[in-house]
Length: 339
Image: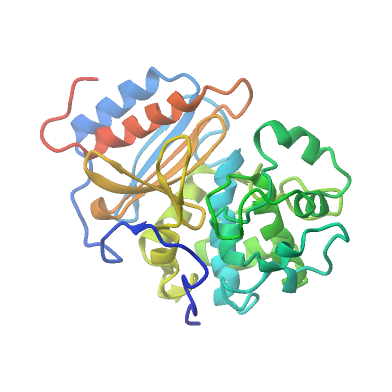
């Protein structure tokens, strides 16, 4: 299926320039992998690191947690996976396009919802541009304690217009899970297994659901580091695996085009992916609380997965910078720096 009206609803800020898929580049050498081991050992919260080059896993570290092949709670990295499920649903005809209004996909809207809810599209949900007050941060506890997560998110006041600035909110992602559920007649889990799990040959276990039975959109998914590598490789290969198109043509380019930016890091944000530069190299990544991360580096034919202890207290934003530094060390030109 073609990918119609790719960006007509979105204010496109920038796109990391490269062709997909990239030609093979040199794999990280032994010195860089040894430095990675040493630097990772200095971060005891990190459980596992998996490095893939040109589709093959070339290095794995396991120093805690369930291991590289066992499911781990990837927290908000789930948003990146949910974006992949959405793309696969568009390719399968479950959703028409990113321009489809959310209201047309849901069974109903709460009676107290602002009329501007009708202006929210799938693209706005993917890019965290719904305009609704965030349910993350200080609002998160009350939201997950509510009797109906979808209605609670939709009934919040607008703090920007749909398509405006990025407002990172798990409630926004959960609306996407609800839209997928109602549009397909299947659970988000069933869609994930059928549209991603089967073609990628990965296991996607059940994860928590809301009071109405909708699988949590944007948090608490359970995936192994090796399974996350396959999702990263799907994007690195322009949405195709073993000759089968899983994501629509143009989906990866759209996903890696910044429509907003993080107020905390300044990194761009597309459809479930942050966009940054490490060691002078374009890098796309998804991230989750506590140090869960999926990095794709097309220029170097590389995918890197990091999982960490997902439990509070939070290690803070500086920890993500330390994870970024692990990847940057694999990308640096010249001789490997001293750890």
